[in-house]
Structure formats: C-alpha cells, structure tokens
Amino acid sequence: MDTQTIEAYNREAEQISLLHRNLFPERLYQLSNQFFNSGCLIDIGCGIGRDTAFFYQKGFEVIGVDASIEMLRQAKNLHQEINFIQDALPYLSSIRDEYFDNLLCSAVLMHLSDRSLSIAIKNLCRILKTEGTAIISFRGTKEKNHRENGKLYQPINLSQIINIFSSEKFNLILSESETEKVRNHLWHNLVFKKSLCLADAAPIFP
Image (cartoon, rainbow, N blue to C red; front, side, top):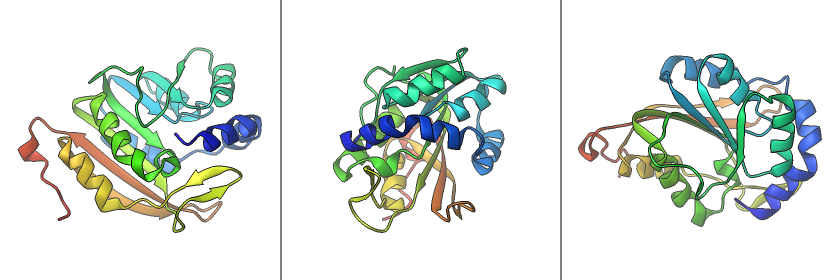
C-alpha cells in the first residue's frame, strides 16, 4: 500500500476510531448475511476492527489485517478477543494460500497505485478457498492520484477488476453502486465466488 496513506492512517488512528466505531456499513452486512459461508473469515483493511468484531459476534473464526500499526493498536484495544495482524496489499505475504472461506476487503483498493492493483487482486484470490466468497467494496474516485489528508485515492475501472477476478477462477455474483448518505461518496460493491474450474469463470467484459 502507498506509504503516505499508511502514515496518514497512523496519524489519524485515534480520530478515525472515535468516528467509525458507531458508523456501520449496513449494506455490507446485508451482503455478508446473504452470501458468506460459515467458517473462517479475513477482514483486509480492518482498521479499528469494527467489522471484524461484527463477524466475530456472528460466529465466524476471524482475522483482521491492516497496514497501519496505529489502527491495529486501536483495534486491539477495542477487541482484545480478536486476532489482528499487520500486513498489507498488494502482497499479503504473511497470509497462507487458500485458507479462508470468506474475505472482506472494504475501503482498501482505491488506496493502491495502478501497478499494484492487479497484484493485489491476485493475492486476494490466492488466500481464498475454492467455493469461498469475496466481498469487495471501494470508493469511487474521478481524479487520478487524488489525495485527501495524505491518503491516496485512485479511480478504479470496474471491468478491469472483474476480469482479473475472472482470470483467477472467480465468478461475479453481484455488482452494485450506492451513494453514502453521510458523506455523499459513491461506493462500489462486488461479490465474487471462487469456482472449481477456469472454464466456469470466463471474462465478463471483452
């Protein structure tokens, strides 16, 4: 992940913790109730662990992963019963192959550089089991290399993401966009399922 972005999250960790602990992504929770399987779940870009804790309380075996050591410090203080580790896209080098039944990656991909995005998606695919489900959510951005308080925001081509997942044996189950009510940001939500064979997951966009 972009170094300046990680540094920004480190600086703002306490402020973000106070703001986000009572803001809940209801639509993502609805999608998880609809599509996630029982078993092991990884929350990539877990931040203060709010969503990780939600899934823990739902009975999942959970691991929260974040690039920011200060965000993880907040997460561990709030949720001492949950396992949190420091790692980051694009590589997730400490995460085992095909280990998780479910994957949540929310508010992360838009912080990656163009050259890192494809590598990141391939590593998301790597760590999920066959028949596993991935929910991907990211904020839409129009301006290239846009920064807010030091955090990088990059525009992301939806068809590019879907085709990369498809090349890694993932089927697109759902694609939708919604405008966040509080801050009026556009968010894209994607749900993928890892299939048994590549033939089942042909590219959707030419």
